[in-house]
Length: 111
Image (cartoon, rainbow, N blue to C red; front, side, top):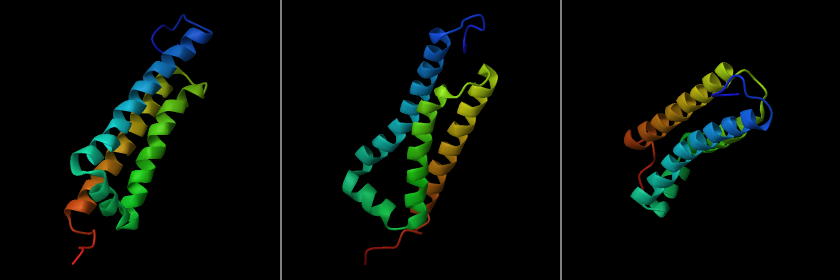
């Protein structure tokens, strides 16, 4: 189990699912909030204007789903939490890459 080492059966899987769900939604929220903040049309056109930025966003989406479904992997609790932390760091790196690409004008201008 994740929180209770003496637990077994479905209780352990339920705890892993709770952590995976929370992690996944926290990082998925970043994707949604960015589009709401800037407007989805502008956000999508900026992202699709360069392949590296598109890949960074797609990788963040895949990482969010991986965080959710990683609870199915039967590993020790410490390794599970470490894997979730590694996925969080990877998602944050992709977010920073996306922001850097958009801020450094690597996205072609429209004029």
